[in-house]
Amino acid sequence: LGAALSFIKKIGFGTIQKHDRELSTYALKVLRAVPNLALLGSTEAYDRIPVFSFTIAGIHAHDIATLLDREGIAVRAGHHCAQILHESVSLNASVRASLCMYNTVSEIDRLVSALIAIEKKFQ
Image (tube, rainbow, N blue to C red; front, side, top):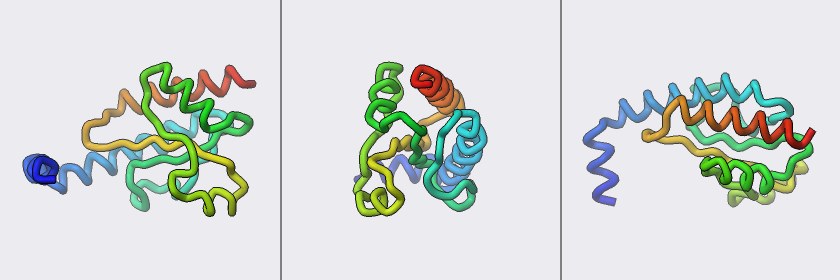
């Protein structure tokens, strides 16, 4: 915890918030390019943190996560401690990409390119 607090203090919380907002804005823009992707949650950067849960129609979340892992892209798939919420919107699982201070726009581009390829593979 001490190391994490030192890291935040060194960089500055405002800098981290600005970076998060920029990543969120960019990710929301480019994720639209993925065919059949349904983003869960707000589509406004000011109304969210850079954590994106989504589904792609016709592809199970665990299949997406496995294929992304093969590309060296780390995501999570499942209920994300929100099984009741998933059930209430008739989803068996979703994929979650979590970004932070150490992530870059180019990593978001890699994610989107990989998602487009995955969606194309399942057409």
